[in-house]
Length: 79
Image 1 (cartoon, rainbow, N blue to C red):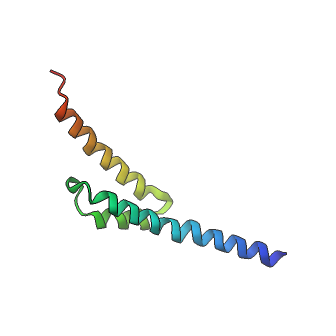
Image 2: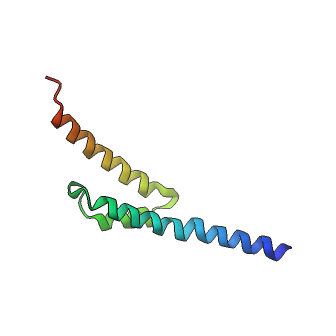
């Protein structure tokens, strides 16, 4: 029974700290290619993978929102 629990904990740790960041980095890379104003999609993907506690993904989403807000404000001026 203890071996089962240990195996379960190790597999969950691998999924949470290795597989999920890699998959998130892949999706960030694919999405960042749609926004050339952001810069290099590879840099955002690597940031999403290697920055701990998913802060890299949060930073990417912040920059993406900043660009979309700027684009919206250009299309809809407050004149």
